[in-house]
Every structure is written in C-alpha cells, then in structure tokens.
Image (cartoon, rainbow over all chains, first blue to last red; front, side, top):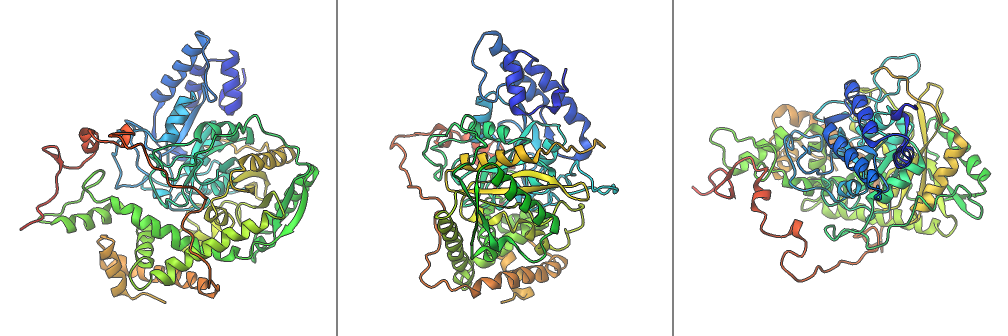
Length: 493
Length: 100
C-alpha cells in the first residue's frame, strides 16, 4: 500500500470514499508521524483522539452509505490561532497559555462539518506577528528543509510556520493558516507548498484570535492547488457572527479548476523588480511567465506605482489595529494574571501584559499606541490609511489591463533560524511582495516553482481580482502542472 | 520624528505594559529605526485621497431584533464566560480592590 502520509487531501478523501483504506488507518498513520516529529516543534499540542474520533465517524458513515463530506476522513493541522472547544488555544503566547475556549471558531467548525479531523494545534509566531517563527513562546519551529551541505535549522517562514513545516514534512496532509500581511504565502514559499489567502471576508474571523482585523484572513495550506481548492471551499462561507463576512455563495472552486488560460491576461508589475532581490528569485519569475504563456495566457507589463509604500503603511496600520485588539489581555477575563503583592488594578494590568507578551508583540503594541496617540494620529495613521487607498487604486487600475498578477512571493529563500532576529526591520522586509495584496484585501496564492542552487524551495505568487479565487487557483494550477515540483525534504527528525 | 526614552516610557504606560530600564534601552533605538523607515510615507502626495475605511465593499447588516438571535454571542452564558477567568468569584470576575 502507498505510504498514507504521502497522500494529500484529495487522495485521502477519494481513497477513503472508495474503500482503498479506512479513515482510521489514515488518522493512525498521521498521528504516528506527528509523534515522531517532535524535533520540528510544529505542534504546540497534539490531539490524536480528535483525529481518531473524526475518522471513526467517517468510517461509520461510509458503512451506512452516507455522504462523507468534502473533507471526509482527512486529518489536518489547526493553526493555534483558531479557537477550538476544549483544546488549549494560545496564539503561541504566554498570556493565553492554558486558555481553553468554550466555543469553536467558525472556520474550524466548517472543517469538522466537512468531515475533517484535527491532529493538533500548530505553532506560529506569537499573535501571528513574525515572518520566521521565532517569536513563539513555545519555541522556534524548524523547517524540514536544510540548505545543501549545512545542518543549520532553517526558518519555515511565519507566521503560519507550524502549518508550513508540518505540511512540508508530511506529518499533516494540510493545515489552516492565517494571513495578515503574508503569513500564509511566505511560509508556503519557504517550504515548497501551496497556500491561498482568499478575498477579505470569505472566511469568517469569528473565533480567530485577532491581530489586525481589517487584514486578517484565514486560508488553507497544502501540497497541491487542488487540495487548497477543496479545503478553502470547506472553510469559506457567510457567517452572521462576523460583521465583515461576505454574504456570497461559496463558488465550487474544486469543480471549476482549469489550467487552460487561453484568453487570460497576466500582469507583471515592474515595481516588483527591486534592488537587492535575489537573482534566482528573478529567474523563477521569468520561468513563471514562460509557464503561464505556455498555458495560453498573454503576459503584459503593468505598473503598481505605490508598491514601495505598501510595507511601511502596513507597519502603521497593522500595529495600530493590534494595539487596540490586544488591549483585551488584561488578566481579568482569561489567560495569565500577574498580581504583584499589594498591587492595584492598573499595576496588575501592566505586570500581566509585561509577563505575558513577547518582545515583538510589545514592540508592535508600542508602535500602534504611538501612531494612534493624540498629536501623531494624522501624521501616521491617517496618512497610512490614505496610502492604503492608493495601493488599492493601483490594483483597480491594473484590472483594466490584466486578469491576474504574477510576482515572486518572497525576496529570498528561507534563512537559518537566528540569522535575522536581531533586526526587526530586516525581518519585516520579507513580506515586501506579500503585503500589497493584503492591504487591498485581494485573493493571493503562493505555489512552489523550483529549488534554488542551495536546494531550498522558491515560490511564485498570483494575485487576483476581488472574489476571483478561481482565477488565482487556475493560474496556480497552470504553474503547478508545468513546474512539476516533486522535491521533498530529506527526513532528519 | 523620533521618540525619546521618556516618550517610550509614556507610551508603554498608556499601553499598560510595565517596562524596566533595560527593556526601554533596547526598545528606544528599535522604535526609532522603524519610525524613521515609515517616515517615507510623508513623500506621497495624498491631497484629495480618502483614508481607507473598508477594504472590500460590504454593507453593515442588522441582525434580527430578537433576544439571543445568535445563541453563541447572546446572553445566559455566565459559566462559559467565566470558565477561563483567573479569579472568578460569586459569578463575577474578581479584581484587586479598586476603591480605597
């Protein structure tokens, strides 16, 4: 029998439905793979019983001839930013250590309703703030990949680094991620997997620990475009509990997949050719154009003039929203309380937040507090929100000339853990290609293109029009079929 | 624009995060690096540009005007609400004495 842990979402679902193997066999295989991979530190908690219970439910339905659901029998990893009833939910922070929700996030509930089970809660950058998975209170996550000829632990990207590491290492067939400014796409690119952030509002934010509410979107991470389409379809949908949820039908993305791009125009933004971009990244971009042309698309040059201002604008908008969202962690309602002897309420707040938040989270709360404070609000926050309008207008203009945009996902391949963590600003630049689409709320996906000269994966990014996840997935599929990316990290864990 | 050590201490106090001398010493240059970098936004002529308020056009909905229209976010869930409180007492959140 094929090694079950090598299978993706579609192969598992179809195999279970066809009786090639049982859902229980699949869950047991992945539970064992997860238990063996502690060195990756991809999971904060494992939930083998959840995976087994969901598998048994699927097997029982099959015995009765009932519908198994679009994710029937597929065990997945859940980023520890989604509230899961009865299972610790920490956002990789000390301040939420031990927090056990009494409710289930809409996205995770949608996945369970579709027949999926949970292998465990995946590690991430603390409160999803980071691009390398080095800010978690529960330790760094290691990528399964190594730079050729070296043994240094490499970054799986961030913030969804537990998700990317687990899927690339084949200890989970797929995982949830969240993307505020690249947190699905950048880790997907670093680990040679696929990940899509849908249009803002497609996936409910209810029960997702909030970072920057006007940017946060959930999405799937998996090893193929097809698997992403299946899982996104299960995750998305209108939710009355989220005021920004889109009241739209979820399209049949899986059924609509087509790699034939005849009649489609793909834009190449000239501003993405930045100084200092890795030569191999530029080479992969050129290759991507060839692949899309081969799939029938016309390639045109476009301009997104405000690209260079997107990242600094993001680093005002996101921290501003974070400083407000994270005000809820006060030592009163849930999570950590630090009450020094004789302390009053205000001292308790300050002590609790000092003990409970990591350095990067504190840094962003301070920036956010500063840019929202009296006297600085207009100069920083209002200006950044105006730039955000200009970035979105750049895209609206571009849609007059093209149907989707092709760009690199990241300016470099993965880097060794510990090599960039001394300088916050250098770390922020990792998301320079990912952030503009986030500011405009657009669907965007990363698909693996090739390995670089050092044996590390490089990703290509496709950005689409609002609500056109299908166009993004289809261009991704065209690249996937031509890239033929089959490389796997060698098992060292 | 740059921030002084006193200003960072003030911001930390507004954000209710206790910070010692050593932490302030590292935070001041880091914040100044970031603030210096975002200064470039000032180059952009934004006259006549509206600040973005909603990224995808969407209208605000009204929920049904009935009690507990959405049970998960409705009332009658005191035990659930208090289940994770560090100090729940007599059906309320417990806090240190506020009034002298």
